[in-house]
Image 1 (cartoon, rainbow, N blue to C red):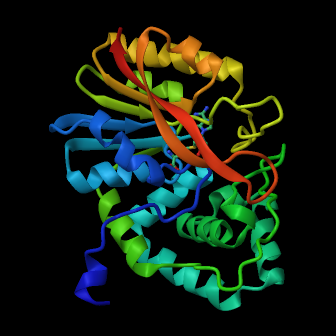
Image 2 (tube, rainbow, N blue to C red; image 1 turned 180 degrees about the vertical axis):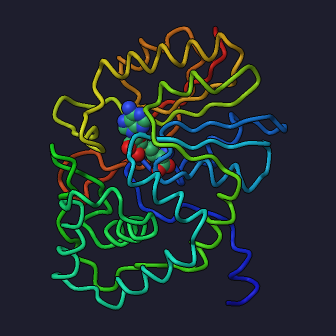
Length: 286
Ligand SMILES: C[S@@+](CC[C@H](N)C(=O)[O-])C[C@H]1O[C@@H](n2cnc3c(N)ncnc32)[C@H](O)[C@@H]1O
């Protein structure tokens, strides 16, 4: 590996629904620019905001959490054993085929799967993420991954320098599989918390909520608004992304709401993309 590969900036190594890479430039002026104690991201997904902030080394501590245990296990393995993860991915790459994809997809049907070494689970998640339809992570009611294989001629199954850069960025970072409300037990005055929940759907038929076995509906959006307000009252610096919808504007009516422009898939027909408004809620009361 050359020196330039060794020093590439850390960026997400997964494709994730709702990834924030395209919004970082618009977010820049709302995120902290001065050193602070701790940063929490309770819906981490592919971690675009975390990797961006980590490059700037503003915080003493970082805690990434979310409800998807496979994803959190993947972060642990990339942080602690990136070399082994890369070896396993090289094997998946060498065997990649339709049969291999469906055999790897079926591994979580084995009751022993949750006790499989984290490096195996991480390599499976990354392999499926790079080869499945649209990089989607979707599980059925039993929690089994059920996305069909995508149609990629040459899927980018592993990018060693990107994984090593991510591993470096994850050193000394706490990762935990837990629901968002657990942040209330950890964040204190002066800490920064960024929430990027599954969005309130733009229309009744849009289905953006099925990341995990449990859907994220209006009840959870209301609970989240309560957590946001509690943290703001405690003196945390709180930020939250969501869709620009009447429910979101109502739930955060007492806070500063900024509008950003995002390119998103705007309806279920593949390829139909457009620019839509989203919001970034800031924990300053108005
Ligand atoms: C919009 S995505 C985050 C996208 C991320 N910011 C990125 O750049 O990729 C929302 C994430 O929240 C997680 N999630 C869903 N329900 C949750 C809950 N109740 N508590 C914590 N995380 C949850 C999902 O697994 C999903 O990865």
